[in-house]
View 1: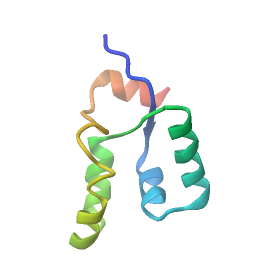
View 2: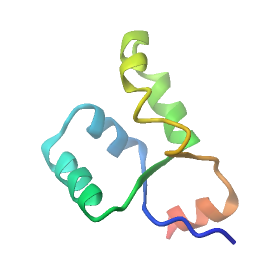
View 3: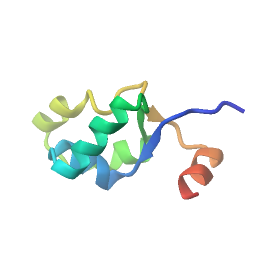
Length: 82
């Protein structure tokens, strides 16, 4: 079993990051200071991209890169549920 250290974030947090909400951005900065990577599931990527414009998609591609997006497996789903 591969263990990944970091935070698995939900769609509402991804949207808050894209909107630069201060409380969430403080969390992002603290995670970076703590060297804790941020991850999203491919489901979050789908949900976010289904609700934004083409121009915004180009801008927000860096948030959802291959290093940061995880395929959903049963193990990941259970970990996120915990």
